[in-house]
Length: 360
DNA sequence: TGTATGCAAATAAGG
DNA sequence: CCCTTATTTGCATAC
Image: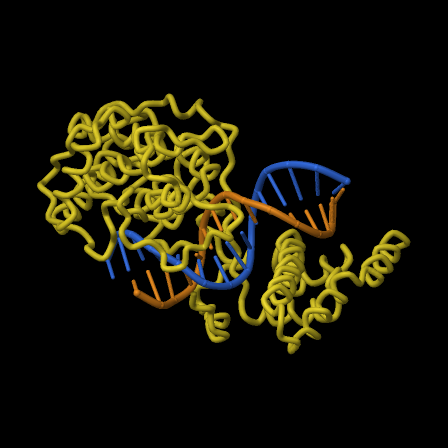
């Protein structure tokens, strides 16, 4: 297992840092504030094409605009398909993915395997030959892939469930989803962008990648699965009557309104991190007012700062625990971990500051 | 270019 | 409200 080098920690490029004070295009939700306008445009096109949440017909102008956007998006899609050597718009019907036999799935899979990124183990399957070199069975939350891999292979026909979650079913869907996505000529990134625009939870390219590879816990998978299923159904409809410029379905406007999107991940600037670390050195438990001050100084949400301190404490604690268990025999460095423990268990500062805050 | 992945931000759950 | 702990998830970037 290769440990990350220290240099890896300082690889946050300045330009890509997102802070809460960056400009926000009001047309899109603040969640997209750190996308380039080009990305936003593409995202918008993707939305029209895939979300199923497009507007009902309003007036001729709107329709014309929609039509243009729709067709330009289609054009882009077709270009992509040609680039990847897919037959033009075959879009094989694949609605009953749950009932597809394993054989047909794998045959389609093999067909596309050569056309696509060969570095990716496309068969995303049980016969994952290149298992991770380190069979990290010490993980407390094993992924589906590892669970299925470590399982005795004799019960291939039996359903393997964890916490009432059917792993085989998820695996089957993951496979079907990937096939469908590729058949539509879409990348993981594009699906992620489409999801970010639809109602309900969104997932990034990373998440989709992990889902397809089953590199997630059963719990996570069962959460993502319905989202992807829904998206797939809508994509199906979109492509089903593509030339009809058909009426968009409004059904999902009323479905799962309650679900929220996750807050976009904050990227701190190196300067901000430096200051945060300095503050942490001085006090691991800053008071509410302290955090407000820091937040104001650095121009981040106070909540973001608070969470940063929580995570920092957690990381410190974990690393102390780790280094402690790592060095069962050797005595060197034992001082550092005990220092960390001392620091974290020192709630004197925290309590005192809280008291001060109450008084003020 | 797309996909895979390390690190850490965000969230959930139980005080 | 804030904490801790465990976990989920995404940004940045390596592959």
